[in-house]
Every structure is written in structure tokens, then in C-alpha cells.
Length: 133
Image 1: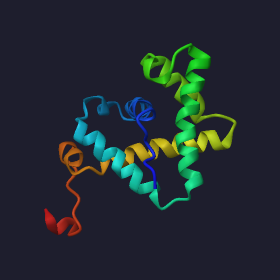
Image 2 (image 1 turned 45 degrees about the vertical axis):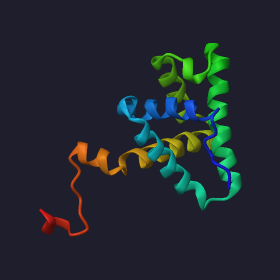
Image 3 (image 1 turned 180 degrees about the horizontal axis):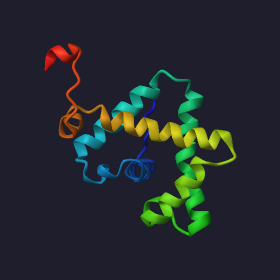
Image 4 (image 1 turned 30 degrees about the horizontal axis):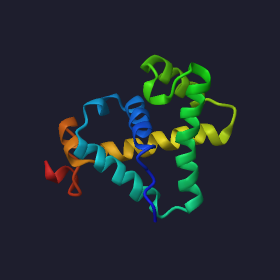
């Protein structure tokens, strides 16, 4: 199975991820790698067509940014990027709307499930429940 996030998609994914979770702007390369790995694992068991659609969605968002603002997603100012993503998140096109929310969910899965991130947030859940406290 080929990696979902190719060298050309990785900067676009990072830009989208920062739009969804602003604290990712301070993520280390190890944290970015863990985020990408978590997303890869989450979609690994899904059909190949879904993986292709996810990559196509990222390319489409970049294309829409170029069409609307004259520059690609990575070079887009934060306000314009946020406006574009908000408009896509409420799109009349169900697949597009679901794709944005799905991508956002995958980014959050990749970020907030990292032990170091959870620790910095003060998240102390345990399988032992309240007994662990």
C-alpha cells in the first residue's frame, strides 16, 4: 500500500491541519510524523477508493483556493484559508461537506491521541477510571 501523504500533499495537509487545530503550528517534526502515521493507520483498513478520495479532496481544496484567491492553499493568508474552509464545511455538496468534516476529524485523531499532547492538555484518563486518581 502506498503512503497517502506524498511529498506534494504533505505541505497542504499541514496547512489544513493548522487551520483545524491552530496549536499544530508549534508541532515538532516528530509530532507531525505521529499525526500522519495515525491518519495513515486510520484509513489503512478502508477501501483504496476512499484513500484516493481523501487525497483528491486535499488537491481540490488547493485548486479551489487557487481559483478563488489566486494562490495555493499553502500560500493563502489564514483569514482567507479559514473563510474557504468554512464555506466548504457548509457546502450544498454533501460529499464535499462530509469530506471536510472527515478530514478535520482525522487531523484531530492524529493530534489529540498523542501521549505528549494529551499530557500537555492535562488529560489524565485511565483504564482504571477514577481509581487511578
